[in-house]
Image (tube, rainbow, N blue to C red; front, side, top):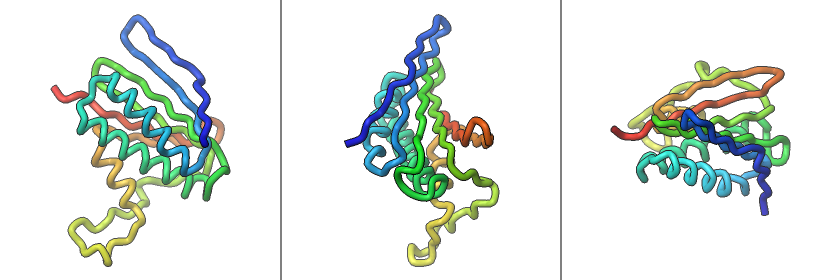
Length: 154
């Protein structure tokens, strides 16, 4: 059983709503993280396809945090910050593991036979194609921050 900690819930007059939760860096936390972001995506007014895109991107990103930033389970926490604006949803994932250079991650071969595809880079490619905006920020003091934006359909 996983435990999450609600750190804050903020609603301000300019119609920005932010909710933050802290999760253990464990694979069993992925389901709870998914429920959290889908709930916030629904509140943001995203349609079902957009909600699924957010869920899949966040699941992949959290898996990468556990595997690559922390090098395994129980080596750190994942902070998930969901911000709802009039335009849609912003999800920020913060960890304090190893950082990486996203520009050095090789792009996967799209259209290649499955047996020829290397698993490296496929998750990052997926995240970047599911979300409208993806930004990375790496700080020794503040940790690694992945910011993903999904906008409402107009």
